[in-house]
Figure 1 (cartoon, rainbow, N blue to C red):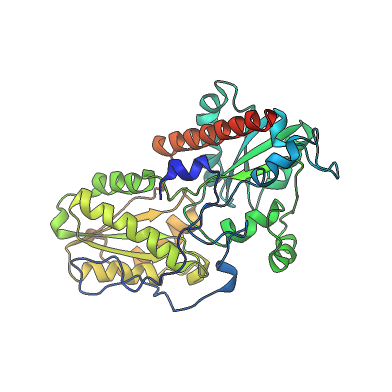
Figure 2 (cartoon, one colour; figure 1 turned 30 degrees about the vertical axis):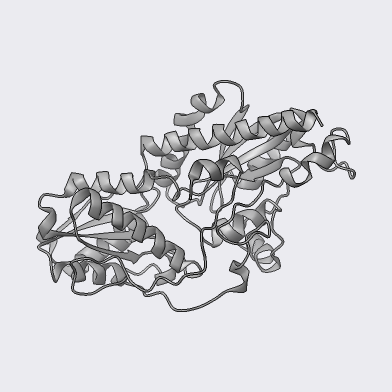
Length: 368
């Protein structure tokens, strides 16, 4: 999918949900597939995204559907509940990440805001940039959207700092901001301490992080820093995973693995999960490492995680390496996707492109 085209139409892209991934990432290994095989299943909840569109098609910004009809009715909807996107009011950007108990993890994510703030605000298309965590800690999504409402923002561009589609991107975030009516999720979120808040500002959700090429480039760069003899090495990619959307996560890791093969010459690539899908256990990662070492002299272990959290990079992945017990044959750094200047640039580019689209729509609405 063309990320630029998707951005122009302001999308919440869920990717194609139709095909089941039946083969893993391996080329040059004895066994194939991920450490946690995908089971065949279909879920009715995955047939349409939050805007009622079929997967693989761009979802429309919630502002767009009623743009023409609202333009001739002043500065509010008939019930007076929401300001119009077309009234020329302020546009804000909200960077949303999952959240973590780890202070270091949170600081790494918050540093993105400081790195991109000036570039996004330059030119006046965006009036403010803020960050929010979906769970565990403040500032929450609800807290920041309330702040945007208090300050009279008409539009908020929500940029998810998430790797790919998951229950968080498909269910939780749209429900939190009132764009999706999911009774199960709506009842569950408050039990987890997550506030649901439907803002007066219109919220447009940007594409997820897996669509630009930056993720593949990030992993390629990190593997190159550790690789010495690609023909004798294999790579284990360790990601959080998601049970409901495991095939989409498999597809993401497949894409990254293909780029690794092309750019580094490493032909043996495995992946494993380290999150709730495997109950945060080390064994799936240990199994993937053993698979690589069965056919290669060295295994390079790469966390495909947004930021460093000692519970994951240390206890789970580090524990897997300890369990394998061949430290001399395993190369591993306690690192993560962030920090990455390419991702910072992607955040700036997607924010400004969506802001420009809103500006064009505002101008179009005023002329009708």
